[in-house]
Image 1 (tube, rainbow, N blue to C red):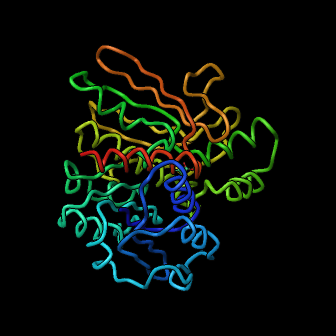
Image 2: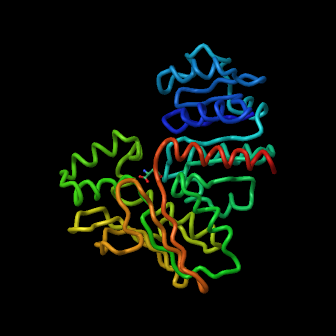
Image 3: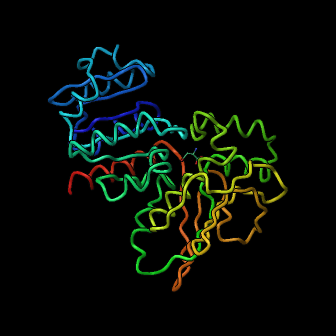
Length: 304
Ligand code: HSE
């Protein structure tokens, strides 16, 4: 049984796929207006009804009964967090994780803020966070498989929306503002677009990568410069030098041949270790891509 915390684009796609692809059920759904729960889990018909409900209105959907978070936690085994990131305090997600983990539940998340602000506290708990970096491309699994190789450097394109914007500007000749609007329509911009355009989103991803590799890096420790079109081929480059350690997110001009030069919503990461150089590319933003990875982590959480 799953408690879904957040019911926007990714949350709804996750709910659809959960019922389509697994025998699992949601026992609670929370959005900005409150939550509903049902001990036996919602039926497919009830989920269809929920999917027709406007944002922030699950309490008024007529499905289940209104529930407090603590009661709902007692009905579920896994919490899936798809709520928007809060980079000031990581709340309300961080308190939810503490409560869920102390009750012995697993947490699966696409929300970067709690990890970016409290990785050390949350690490080694039953927390699954593959969806936070590169969405549909399982970079976190790859990183976890590297030790005892020593990772020296990671550089890449970790933000799908700004990569889309820069591709539209330089490849297709679209004005910057129009490209930003298109990215919003695609649903890949953060609710607060400054998180993408000023680099907090890719900076949080660098913090998660570094800490996954066992290197302590704080969000305030990432040097950030806002996205700016510098000429072809400008990309929002994220770099992590693990030996210094130094981390930065800044606009940079890449050559056409650079292995991390990707277009539109693609992400690419080059990992240099003491024995190998690994390149991983794939879709880094998108409702379906993120929902599938959340589903994979949910199945893992239930298997452990
Ligand atoms: N706004 C993010 C991006 C979504 O553009 O990459 C996925 O983390």
